[in-house]
Image (spheres, rainbow, N blue to C red):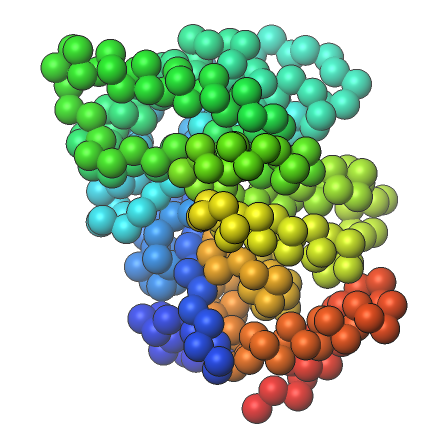
Length: 324
Ligand code: PEP
Ligand code: MG
């Protein structure tokens, strides 16, 4: 199988009926970057910046952060990289940050909420991202945005830093794209204006699913209880894909499920065209997408839905088993 995937490395993820899907990889450590070329990923769809912070005994200095971001862009060698600003709090507790005892940390003071309230840490990171880019194109994505004003405020702070860098005579990215992660169901129903103002959205399926089903992703008793291919969830994904399509918002899916071939096929059938996953999943996902016919997969899904299935997985698995 490994050989099959290697052969596919430089081929597009294009289905039999000519649907082309862009496959990127998720990363979070410098050590992940060598996989970029070997996996055939088109870029880094999600770079989890908190890992550098989690591995350290103290906050990395701005210059150390900038240095890492710069090396990541060097390694990407012109391929796009989307840096996600710190997603700390919840399950990712920094050893040097005062722990706030929260009854429900996943729904608590985390990610952009913490970033906006502790402005200094976020500001330092935004400066480091701008400096690390060294004039190259930069994509910045804010995690766990639950309503429009959080994005507006975070974007304003980033643009303030751009102006400050310029006034200091530093180069700024030739192109700056600012996006948000869609990880709470609320954001799928944000005003049209929000979808038009973001440069892109990325569905954080791990969090989105835990809030959609109200099932803690850290809790072994419930984390596998609800299928990603549950009709309710897939219909919700379709709703997001359609809104983004109608409003001209580029959208991707970067949760772990994108790396499972059947799930990836279902997401594509529901309208998504950009997926980001662990590097090792790119080969298997591409292999299936190239064998599949998306219109047929969609018909299988629609039939399962009209038959009253709870999940389309059995029907879609049958379809895949019968592929040439
Ligand atoms: C997600 O929630 O799907 C996601 C990609 O972010 P993380 O897993 O880091 O929360
Ligand atoms: Mg998340």
